[in-house]
Length: 360
Image 1 (cartoon, rainbow, N blue to C red):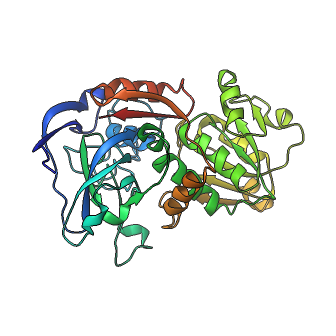
Image 2: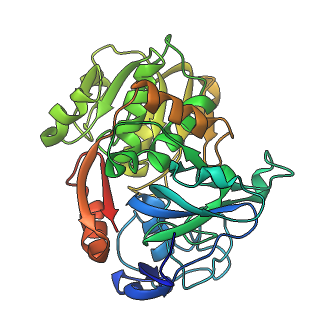
């Protein structure tokens, strides 16, 4: 197969506003190194990590909600998810779906032609459980906002599905994040799970994956999105930020809160947890600074877990769920790669339900 020497790509040139996303038509196409594969990208999904890394939101100097604009003040040593600087220019985009078109040394040539999605966690192959030795596809290395991308062969997971590339590109980040949260909180069929922000990519995945475990799901979403969230499988859908959360729950016994929202609603989320309940978090799009009454934590025997680096078995499990038809995509919109700025603007506005992808 003859491959072009250059490709179209959207390249992030540094921390800042949307003007840091620059569309190129002649960016050098990467070659797969030892142990890597080259993927022709069919689609790549958007996620909050793309936005937060570009804007520098992960810096401890930033205390407000996620937004699309760059932040005036950043700590130089902690503007990315891992608390360390990343190198620019960088091609972002983690949620890749595509076809392997070439392999590097040590990779079975028979993999050429495989349809794959990305396992985004880049682990040390000699120490894969060490969370301090992990990177993220599209952050610590170039990702999928391009026509071609390289990644370790072990991170390119073969998938056999009738779903389109755009639909498959909705799973990697959102659904693995959600499954990681539910795994860390040990959710079972005995639980009732409250999901704030249930219309988002991770929120919708939490609804589906908690229902898959047999749990009862109570979802919070803006009223215009209630029908969409109900179709994802929520047992009960409530307003996005009710003033009296306990009253609208009407006796529901919440044993788990699975949260990527944070912000002003947070104290009410903790207050409604049953004794012995669990709170699991993998985001704070409404703001990272919250107030906690420590008496609520210890007198009610609550357990709090953060969830970022997922267990290695999570993404292979997601692929099995896809192939078995146990979870389904929530594709909100597709954009052309060159329209990534518009796609990210729509993503940040949160008027959609589900996931947004770009198509090279």
